[in-house]
Length: 411
Image (cartoon, rainbow, N blue to C red; front, side):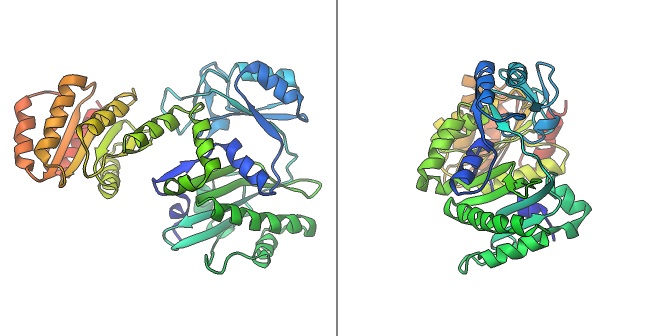
């Protein structure tokens, strides 16, 4: 089985912060360790004093590999373990206001604006549990493994028999008897299984009620006293269903104070653009989700790395095009831009006119490779060529255009 398809959500998604995911779990009756958030070193120390020691201090950012990351203050690790409130305050002063660089960020990292202060859990075993909405299966599935606390895709690659995937009949639902079967395969004790089975059912109900695309617990931990804790949680919601959930809307508004990327995506959404930030250096501006994904694929094929998914839609207007450039140019790591548009509803010559106007009014900080196909594509080609601008290049062939964008980004 190709496990990668199980863990990659579609682009239309909203990922909650860990503390938000854990609130949903707690409110559903699932056990998580006590904790809170803080945005200053003083508040972090006070928060720790209200909790039981020892403590876990986590950078409140949505990137993987936090524990192995580096802060621009020189502190090693975006996850710290502390014994006293004073230690918490000290590490907080080296985390809040600094950039965290991990394997999933650009070289400049992401800003740490707040922290999670949590009570440490005495872990005996680390398990893996997740519910996903999977296109290959055509519905929801539950994934579980005895090898928790690690990258589950690496586990699936190195030891595929240790990762179990079971489709769920969405009409029949998911019973406690099926949950108990999972606890037996995970070799939980009777006491652990009793709580674990209830938690599995609660988690599936939460997954279903919140229109989630993914609900991942890693690790799902047992303790020496045979309790079950969700030590880390990731919940991803279908963007198209957020309007049904007031609590998720409130979470998204709250998250904008923590993450630059979140606010950029919200800003794009308000302009009618579908935008998802990534870590590459080639900006993409495309109309249509299918063409956008094909564009990113061909960039990867020729050795490049896309910086974003950006769909301006079939009827993009000048205001949207300018806003799209504003978003792309706001990222200093973008070294070239690939504009790949099919002129259908909006003619190619009108798109070319907008691009030239953007060049003259905004200026292009990096080379722009344009591929326009469809209505009046030949007219658009001539318009761009007549500009004779070293930062604006037109190319009919998609492969050649992708190669050119990659070559500019790698200079």
